[in-house]
Length: 152
Length: 152
DNA sequence: ACTAGTGTTATAGTTAACTATAACAGTGTA
DNA sequence: TACACTGTTATAGTTAACTATAACACTAGT
Image: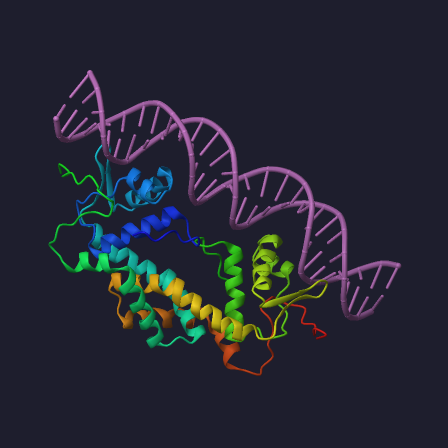
């Protein structure tokens, strides 16, 4: 979670993508609160408005609901919605370009698997662990986030 | 070649990537001229300065040489240079993210191969043909580019 | 009521990307 | 020389992304 920003895409979109990844990985489940705008802004040393913009994207996509004074919460059905939408989006918009690049560079499946494995072992431990242990306490990603129960 | 721009990355970088792809695919060979700044600008209805910026990146990477009054030409060794650099860059910077996304979405090799095949048949015919027929006339990508011989 | 935590809005400034328009500079050919 | 191509630079304006600073609005706990 401490990796910095990639200059090939706006921060607010990378932020949106991170939350999406956490939902897909099961780190954030339905009803869970997102780490607060101010917390994220402070932790990543980014402007609160930038965080808000990323979160607003999620609201627009019906993935997240905002409750003033309480926080932002994962909607019911968010993960299913994502599994449909993101698959199609990825296959249509990103994978063709990536696939062409792989072919152009003559990369072998071995090289690709090696590179993927290398990264996973060094970066994704936390996310993998959280995803694999299903019913464990699902603390959100912020440092010490609020964790109040939404009153339905 | 008539596909429009992707708003997820600046045009000048997409332009740079297209030329890189053409070099890797063998569409542009050492000594070949790039389509002229003005031609590309007109064909894609983009500002000449934007095209120039993309081309300048290639000059900075030693892939292309600029000759005032003549045009811009692929350097010798450009393809080898690319095969080394781009492989490393792709495996380190892009593939890990893509690989994680694939895993998250639970995409199968079949789905990925299908999507890749679908796209290739509809988009890349021209590039593939040019790459496969090796010694054919290698006309550059512009509409009717200059095609002068550089005097070494 | 007070306080500390939420999301939200307002104001204003910087930078990068892109644009339009125009001119300058070098090369080859008729 | 004149012309038609090349790359290059100058000037200036728009938009999107990001920033800093501050205030407003709402909720829960004490």
